[in-house]
Length: 467
Image (cartoon, rainbow, N blue to C red; front, side, top):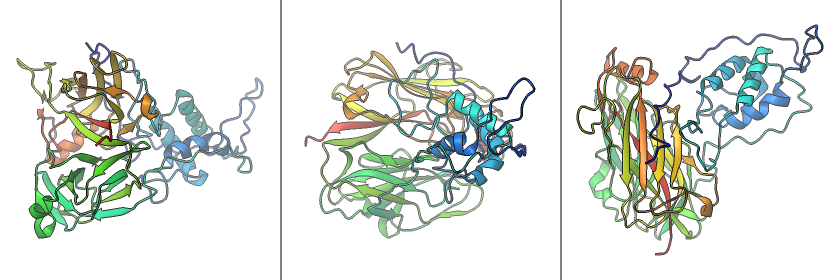
């Protein structure tokens, strides 16, 4: 069963991204050859090197400038020649290492995904070679009067915001332990409404580990929250349906056309925020949700489901006896696998998005399905993130019309395999241990805190709106 996904372990974690500062920052060679011409090699005229305006701008702007822009979430700009030229070697190094663009989904020997992905940032081998050739040629400018067409970079922010809901009171996070608070906010809905896009904006990214958004249909969270607007809670969830999530690197949630998350009249929204201390007292007083509502009732309702974290845990390497979720210290290719059978009463549903979630020790996750009752291939790989990084997480939306999306139904079996590198060769482990004041790996178990681990699939489902 699921022979496609039960193969070899994943690749080791890549080096840090340019934002992490560990990629090469070699200086770009200077060149007077900025018009695309190249010197003769003595054996005939060499091919002219690629130039910014004719070859490189469509790649860098189209794939990178959504984040690498003025005021963007990345620390450097790449939207024009003057900004990109000094970083040409760094860009080539980063894309060759697989650190940039931060798009971990990939086709591999183990996983041939059968559905395209929206806003696909991946670069081909030819693209990478072009960036390297440009850097080695001294990053020539080319002719600004005859530029190649440049695509619009994918937006990392909502373009339409109807409602902003911010936490009512600030919290101070200090000490050594992670903390979980649930904030109750009121969208003031007088009739059933549907949400088509949402963005979570963390108030203090130094301590906000992740955020989950739940619908509280009867508004009872207001009483639990009291005057301050929040109450201590667990990281495992809150009352109501999950309609949104944020983790580092996440983009806004955007449902397909004629699909929305239902928020009944009188509901409140609960922001379940996981805080991770960083050694000094930090305050979060401004985490907020930005929402784009639908004008009409859609034909379909969206849901998010979190599946994994030990459900259907299988025996694996390094287990002592039966199945055990334990990642031993010093092991670089440890895996935890789960096989979860969907309840029989679930009708056939469409899957519009999928994501993987682990913490710092995780380096690779694969998600597949063995179908018993839904239409589609008997076995299908839904997602592989072989260069997973906690710092760059996102959900992946399938680029298909509704009728062509992959299907799931009761009786189908979901397979999840997470690979962990619990050695000092994993930059995530080094960072996590440093937060504890440790200098060598420790055994890691399943848990909610940052320095525990998870193996969780995030499934975006579509249900016909027949009620």
